[in-house]
Each structure stands twice: as structure tokens, then as C-alpha cells.
Length: 482
Ligand code: UDP
Image 1 (tube, rainbow, N blue to C red):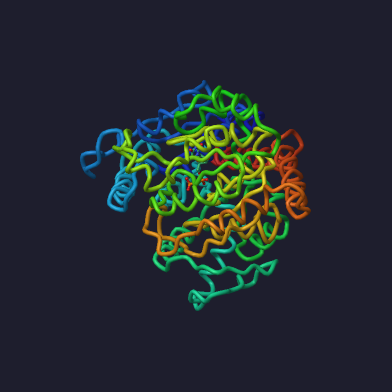
Image 2 (cartoon, rainbow, N blue to C red):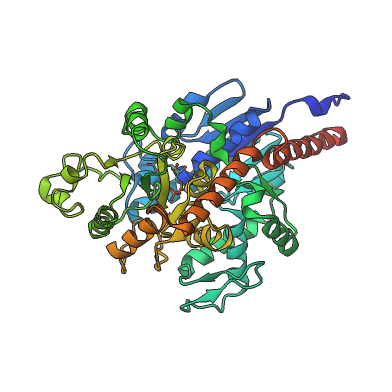
């Protein structure tokens, strides 16, 4: 029965992340923002994915496992995440498996209804279930609001057909791009977007100051929909151990990374990583190795491990590393073959720049650490993120990537050459450049704003309070009605 202090009762919220680390890591971090305020959070996922959450389980943070349909989709046991596959056939199977989770997920939610569901936008069918149960649903797509607005503009202006240079229509800033998304991907996203707009609101892993008031207003004006900026999600992790354990288990020890970085001067190391889904061909890796070596700067380079090729022969290695590279760069560089503790590394004073694919998580993690970026977008919404960083907020420089790929592993028709890479690295890392200093100052300023946003009284902190109040009001008005 409804009592006078109903609003003081914690919320019961289900979070349903998609089976890819770029979606799952931030949404689970955001769930922890809610549980840190005393609400009861349950993550609904599959057993192998649930493992990354073990360190965070508490009274307020629980996991509900749904069996992954490995046999039905013909995937080996334990392969339950897009980030664990490297080709189209297997990624299509992960997608198919995610659609098969619908029945068991619906059953669980119907039998144990929560006060609110936060579902990845790929689970568009959650919308019907939430409506049927009269539960508010919040959508999450992992993009910045800037990118969401850019996609909306493209859906509304389909006539723009891959010209060499085009400006995003109806935008607060003049943003020009040299690449357009593949049409089928755009169509797929547009369908999901229609359902997303029916949700109670959109949760954004960003802070209001980085997307900017102008884009928040633009979004509200053009859609009438509400976006809740609650990030940066990664800032929920405060200890070195937590940062190091975020996502998968790292292949290097936290101590090895930290002691290596501690021995370097501030801002002297370039960090290179292309997220959890990009798998560049050997000839592109070779260009990176040559470009970075020619720049003369120190580096940490994360290279995804080649499945089944743990013992790489010298001959195989020379396809992507110039002869003698490791020997010559023994003191200067560290190659991490597999999962790296990215948030931990980015937070170290020695890191002077981040060569990134502009995945939104990587981007907002770099911003949070005040690290300027060298942008190399590959797929998804990354070309929009690049523009926010370089043209709007001026906290990075472009390497010159022009090819908007369908997925992180699809063949590259145009490599980014070693000269472009060397030039971009020098532009940000060489000593004595006024331009680089200005970009670094600006990046550090946004880093401070990011950290303030999640503190008491900060914009994301206030948004979370407002959202929790809003959800409690909805819950309580429902129980007063009943
Ligand atoms: N990540 C990491 N170590 C790695 C590779 C990736 O911790 O070696 C994390 C990174 O910090 C980020 C996420 O994985 O939180 C990747 O998300 P992003 O949106 O940057 O790219 P995606 O993988 O979705 O392309």
C-alpha cells in the first residue's frame, strides 16, 4: 500500500546491455551510478559476459544470467560477445543469439517486473514489453548526443550521397565530413532510432559540457525527446585495481604498466588502441609501426591478439612489424598483444596523446583524463566523434582517415599511410609547438570539467538525481493509482 514516504524507497532497475564490450562496459558502469545511490540494480546478461561483473557484485548490484544459445547459433562455448569474434559470420551469429534471448528475457522481466528498464537500443523489442507492463523504458545506444543528432540529420536528408565534402544539415556548427556511412548500416540504425524515440528518454555516456548546451537544445527542439547525460561512466572507478579490471582481464599486469609509465616524463608517451572491435590487416599495422617509429616518440601500442596464433613465428611477425622493430624500441615502446587496462593507462601523467579509432567510450575516457587525441575513425559513428573532438571542441587532430567501414574487421581499400601517421603524431607530440600546447590546455580543461560533472553538484550528478526522482514519481503515481 502507498505510504507517505514512498519516494524514499529505492528503485528496482534492470539494465540490459548488448553483447559487445563497447556497449556493455559503459552501461554497467552507469548501472553502478544508480546502485551507488542505494537503488537495486540487476544486469541481465549471459554467463560469459557476467564474468566481467564479478568484482562489482553487491547487495545493490546483482546479475541475472540467461543461458547463451551457443548450440542454436553454432558458436563455441564461452564465445558470447561481439568483441570475441573477428569476422562477419561470427558477428552475425552473436547478433542472432542476442535476438534469441528475447523469450527468456521477457519471461524473467514479466515474472519479476522492475520499476524501470534500461535496455540497449539493439533490443528494440523491449519497448513492447515495457509498454505492456506499464514500466518506463530508457534507451542506451552508447553514442554521444552529438553523434545521435548527426545521424538524425542524415536520416532526414537522405539525398546526401557520399560527396567528397559535405556539411551536416541544420547543425549548430558547420561540420564537414569527407566520408558517409554505408547505406545499409544507416537504414538499420534508422529503424532502431524510431523505437528509441518512443522511450521515456535516452541515457548518454557523456557530460553535458562536452556535447554542449547547443546540441542538447538542438536535440530537444528537433525530437521533443529527453536525453540524460550521466557520464563519463568510467569515472565510477576510483581505485587503480578497479580501473585495471574494467572490461576483460588485462594481458599485462597493472604493476608492469604503471612502473614503465612512471619511468617516463610527463606527456612523453603516445597511447595507441583501436577499441575492442577493430582488427586491422597486417599491412595497416605495418604502416602504424613505421609511422610511429619515424616520429621518434615513445609509445604503448595495443594490438588485438590473433586468435589461434599465440606463438607467432618471426616470419608472421615481420608482416606487421618491421625487422628489428622490437629490439630497436625496447626502451621506447611497449606492445600489448591483447586486452590492455586502458582507463588506468590513460590516467597516467606520462601519456601525452592517444591515437584512437574514436569509439565513444575511448573518446570520453581520454577526455576524462585530459589527454588530447589523434583521431582515426573506422566505423559506426566514429567519424562524427572525430568532428566533435577536432572541429568543435578542438582537443585533437585528425590523422586523415577517409574510409567509413561497415565493421571493424572489414577489408580496407585505402590504408592510412605511415607519413600521415608520423605527421599527426609529431603535430601533437613534438616539443615547442604552440598549436599542440593549445590543444593540450583545452583537453586538460575538459578533463577537469568531466571530473567535476560526476562530483556532488556537477551536471551529471544533478542529472542522475533528477532522473531518479522522476522515475520514483512515475512509480509512486502508478502505485497510488492502483
Ligand atoms: N578497452 C580496454 N582495453 C583494450 C581495448 C578496449 O579497456 O585493450 C575498453 C575501452 O577502455 C573502452 C571499450 O573497451 O571502454 C571500447 O569501447 P569503444 O567505444 O572505445 O570502442 P569499440 O570497442 O566499441 O569499438
